[in-house]
Length: 395
Ligand SMILES: Cc1ncc(COP(=O)(O)O)c(C=O)c1O
Image (cartoon, rainbow, N blue to C red; front, side):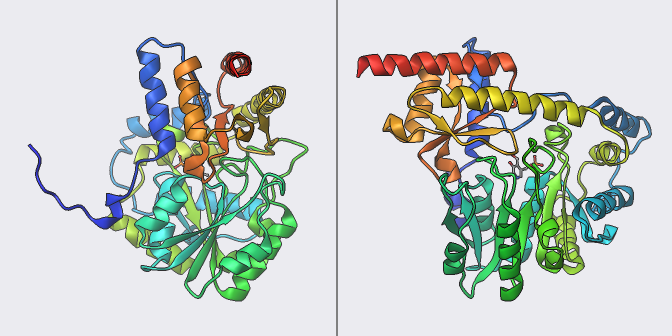
């Protein structure tokens, strides 16, 4: 039976996250017995480190299974503030930190707190899929500013200036970037920070991949580049990627106290506290040595070199060398068809799953994750090589 429900405009045109949808499709094919090589996942393929798991288990045994303050347990807010102070070189108080149900939720809070209907947010393409959707959900408008592979995905200052309007509320930065893996240069960050201060707009700096950087590349955060921009900055981060804790759902946002308080109030009426058990587990990540992080980084580094190197040897494909994160943003323009078509063919013909770039703002690229086993990465490369050979033979 169909009933005529008239849904709100904000959800009528909203589609679910394409990356999550594809991951679900790959899992379904795998379950059906297909030899799927899933390179779509945006999460580390390592278990959560043992001390963190133990802290979660302890929290259950200690009955820390009840509501916590909506903005997070004081110990965790303090530990995050301490970590930020040490790593950013700018002093943070616990009251400037809001613990959220993942970094995605932190970003959601930020757009809700900043945007009135018609307000604008500058987002650089290629972008992480949820930024424009979340701006839309807040009633705002995403102003997309393109960056190019030839420029190493560094945003052009003139293009940013041209996109600014009296309605601009914020600029979103994501370094290292999902999907490109590019790191923003210090001078570029400084220039953007100064522009934001001059114009009185906020910078939302999504630093979720800041610990996943491959030497000799070095990450530079916005505030490391320009500490005086702290009053105009919201830092978004979390434990999902660094500590292989994607399912625990703990992120945070830090910034000027009035904004953090406003987002805390918002959270108190929407999700309430992030999961209590997960908060205690995350506390262990901030307060105990976790050697697994260095080991995981080393492994990702090797996989990056082999996988991106391998893609660059395949005729018809080319790939930017990412300085951070765990994605290979593969250029498919030479294949002459949009990413959605090519990705669908790879899925059907050779069961290799990559995420088509359309959702990230570019139909010329497919995103592979190298947070997959070395065997899967090797096998993926081999199948792509044979598919490309067949295409050439058939042409
Ligand atoms: C750029 C970026 N920001 C935020 C997130 C969200 O992370 P979380 O799992 O903590 O919500 C992701 C996850 O894929 C991401 O890639």
